Image (cartoon, rainbow, N blue to C red; front, side):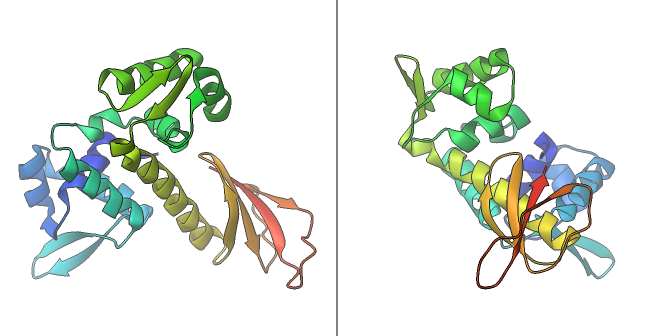
Length: 211
C-alpha cells in the first residue's frame, strides 16, 4: 500500500523540500526519491510545484499525513517507516485501545497467514505498543494514533480512487481491502461490482470497490 521510503518522506516532509533536500536528509539517491514522490503524488499524499529551476515537494492537507507526522514527532525513538509494513498496517487498521482482538480474528479479517499476524502482534507487544490479556490483544492508548493513521490512510486512498475512477461518490462502509460507494451515476468498470439500486429518495447506486 505504501512503502518504507514513502513513509520516510512523509515523516520528513513537514515543510516544502526539493528532491536533493530529501535525498540528503534521508540518504537516498535523488532518482529513488523522485520515484517515491511520484508514487505519493499518484495517491494525492504530496504535490509538486516549480520554484525557479527546482521542483519543490509539499505534503497535502490530508488527515492521514497530519496523524503520521504527529506520531513520528511524538515518538522519535520509534522507526515507524520500518515498523509499518503492509501487513502491520492491516493489523493496526483493526487493533485499537478500545477493542480487543484475538489473533484468529485478525487472521480472518486481514487475510494474512496466522504466522504473519503473530509476528506483528509479538513486535507490538515487545515494543510495549500493545498488551495481551489471555488470548486478546489491544493497542496501548498512547499508540492509538497507529490505528488512526491506518484507517485514515486507507480512507484517503479509497477517496482518491473514487475521484480518479468515478468522479464523485460517498463511502457508507469500508474495510482495509474494499469499500462500498454510493453514487448518482452508473459505473462501468470491471474493478467495481454493481449492487442492487438502493431504495432511497435520491435513488443512488451501490458500488463495491476492491483494493
